[in-house]
Image (cartoon, rainbow, N blue to C red):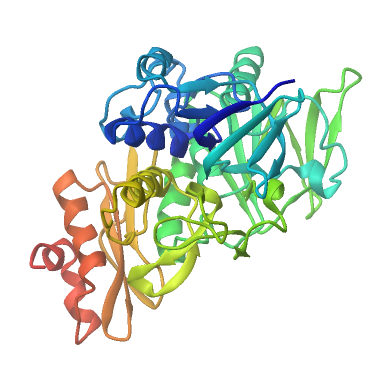
Length: 433
């Protein structure tokens, strides 16, 4: 098949791709210069909706409602927007080979695409239990969530097994958000994870205790310190039970697995410098290969605030890294300098009536403040992380937009504190910064 050439190619069709396209349009990209190549069948959308609004029993979110860039309060980019801007959306196209030396991408169907400048925005794939050879993990109704196709399968399973039993494997973001979504859909829900508490990469034991108790009060059973080692299925191949390491057997009509993701970098192995599981970039997201950029989940970039290389898997960084890379690309062309990426790590989640935000770095000793009683009608509490006499991280559940801004400012400015006692004031401390 004859190849197509573009000045700019974005490989991947997730959040980073959509925000990069918007920035290219802002910077005056010419019709025909830019293509997005995505294995998904739809234009870029706000992925967080899949574990939240998409699964609601009433008034569920559906496309075209959550195409980028609505998640950050921006314009919704429908497929027509790309046509109007002369940006080519090449959908349902999986790239199976990337040759950076000849600037050529080859699809599963044998089509070739060449470029002058490439943005790698391939994101992550979910880790599957079949990857570990878990017995029975290929049974029907053992589901994962990453793309809209996964969400559609999950919605169909939820509707087909109404009022049934669901087991959620994993106690991180996906585990917590999907346990809530399944409970809202009137399922009997059990969440299982091997760690001593939920969200261990971010939460302290104190913070986790609140969410575990809140979920328990909502009727979600939380089983910690054990893991799924096998699954039983019926004659049709549908899952019927989850076998745990501690010998417990849980009946299940649906199993949802959220045990993490892997950055999709395989196409580029041996062609670009890698670090910490991702593709190493500079502060403008350019890789070791000139004219090749990496954004979002796949990029390991200099986190200026902490003077170290990091990879960040979060929608906020996907959006901001995309904008930074495009500004840098256009800046190089025009000879204008662009400031280095100076990112404040930010994570958030929403489930049931809860919503938390975290800013900064969760290192050092911690102090808890506020009302963290899970039985409160409106719990509001937070935590600060202190290291070497400075506040490095801040967490807040139930905060108003202004309160969330205040804790973000604390994490950004890293105020010095002489004693942990000062921080017991909680939000009052933040309001003084």
